[in-house]
Image (cartoon, rainbow, N blue to C red; front, side):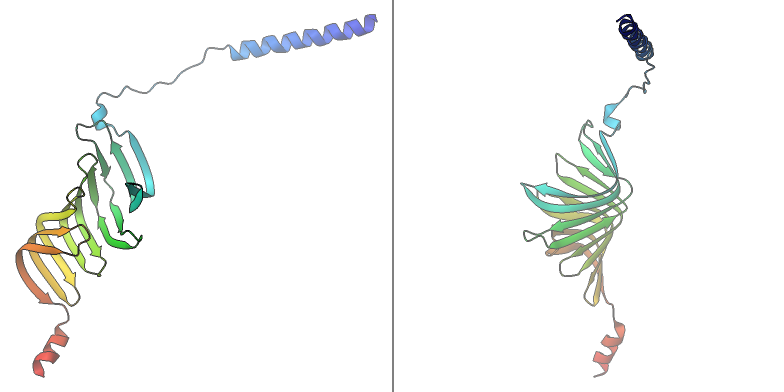
Length: 198
């Protein structure tokens, strides 16, 4: 009986020692790391994502697909906006989920309250009919369902290259006009010469 009591006391002593050691280790003072406080929240992104491909819904229906290397959202700016400083590829879907317009650019900004896009740098758009639009700058107002630009624009349409300055269109790029047309150039001049000789 004395031997059993001695074993129990030894086990109890070991248990108490382990518990005390655990308390000593866990009660050590923790070192907290702090970052600098944010001085201006308007200039700091509330979300930063890299290598993004996502869909955007409007009224519960998938309307757009965005692909970008860098997406930053500034919710605390005076006018909240999204920034795509490393380029953007954009697909717009029709109600049957067919792509009815595509846009590529070097940089883009989207003001989320106004629903206004500003696309810059090598802006290239393609509509459902395969017409290609190229300009250094383009605006897209989703509320007005209107795309427009004051910059030089080049439109590649079947066998024609149309140039001008200033441009406005519906958001599917199917009904558009150039404000100051500068010229229409046939792309395939060989076919034009053959037609003239006949």
